Structure formats: structure tokens, C-alpha cells
Image (cartoon, rainbow, N blue to C red; front, side, top):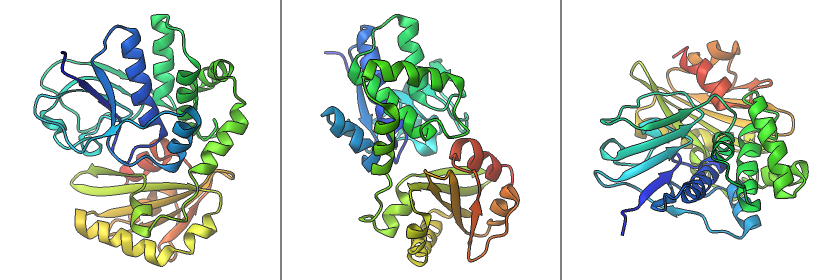
Length: 308
């Protein structure tokens, strides 16, 4: 029996991370590579669970670490800080990603596909087309859901013509109304009421490093920024706890309004100046409104990173 090859996205997985893992597994099997199996590196969020429930399928098995020499395929990430424990000693066979390349090194050659698209599943959609494989309804819904999530129904500045074309084709195969389905899916992810403040600031948090400065950008989607800000005092306590625990210079917690495409940022640490410079704002009560800012990948990270 062949040893399993693990496919997984980043820690604190989002819909693209989970869906891309499942889609990549299905694509591999259509290509005759039957040893790959989708995994996940964290709890499934409510938005992604909506997709899984809609399709009546189970989430991939969760793993906390990999053994030395374990063969893996990465999707939706490449930075080791965002990957599984033990990734430095794993054998990385491939990467399929749409983020920047940072802190990444392997001992052997590998297949690496990186495109500046709005979503990893758009890349996988094009791979289906390249190989000439028919896309099933389930696969179409998985890929469409990921694109909707990462591009906020094509409203995010990360959206490309490739994402639009893919979503148009996937809508026909899936047999669903993308606007109706997408809005319900996104709204499912904005139900934050039963999360503790510690859970909220870690729900979708990514850690980065720049010139020995360690910082986290966490993001949640909502239909009411005001409701989330009612918890600011306790959110700050949770953020300060993460700063102390991880030795961070900055923790940025971004609350994004999916209906109006604005965000409110709460920033703590000794490098909050990077946020002020990045967006030409003045933090008041540790926070500021970021108009037309919704994307961590294209707006938040690049601007904060260059000012750290």
C-alpha cells in the first residue's frame, strides 16, 4: 500500500484552504495519483461548514504535526509559520498558491504553481481545464465557494478576470444562483456571537515576520462592525495576551464589513505606527476606519509590511 501524501492549507483554515485541499485530492485522483489525501490544520469555520453541510460531505481530518520525511502538498500557503508543525522536515512535493512567497526553502526540487489570482481554487479550476477533466457538480460548488469567499463575491480588489471567468463557468456546472448562494454562505461566516474574545482574535489570524519584527494580522467578516466593537475592551485583553505569549511587536485585528466593503482596525503593540503610516490614519482608542480596505493579502499585509 502506498504511503499517504497529505494535502493541506494553512493554519486557521478558511474556505479556500479547505476547499482547495478537497479539490486538489479529487484532481489528483483523476490524474491517477491515488495516494493523496486532504487534511486540515485547524477547526472548520462557520462559513466553510455551510459549504460542507450544503454538499453533505465531511471536513478533512485534522492534523497537528507531520513526521520527518512525510510527503506533503501545500495549497493556499507557502510560509512555514502558517503551516503544520514539522513542515521543515517534511518532503514538500508541490505548492499551489496565490500568496507572496516568503520564508520558504526545500532540500529538493518540487512542483510550484503560484499565480496572483484572487483564489487558489481558480488556479485549480484552470488545472482541470488543462488536463481536460470534467468538473462534477460537487467540485464546482467547492471551487465556487472558495472563490466567493476569497473575493467577497468578486468585490475584493484581489479579484482578477481569471476569478470572474472561473466563477461564471462554475455557476453553470453547479446549477446554483451564485449571488443568492454566495450571500448566504458569507453571512454564515459572520455569526460571531458564540465565540469568546480569545477565539475571535485567533479565528483567522496569520503571523508574519519582517526584520525581526513579528506581527499578526487577524481578520473577521461581519455585517455589523458596531456589534463587534462593543467587545473592544475584552478583545484588546485577548490581543495583549497573544502579544505577550508570542513576543509580537504588533497585533492588528481587522473587522471587515462584507456589505459595505470597509474595515475597522484595532492595533496594539509597540509598532502601531506601522498601521498609521500604512493607511495614513491616526489611531484613536487604538482603532481606525479603513475605507475600501477588505483584503489582507493585497491591502493589509503589503502596506503594513513595508512600514514595519
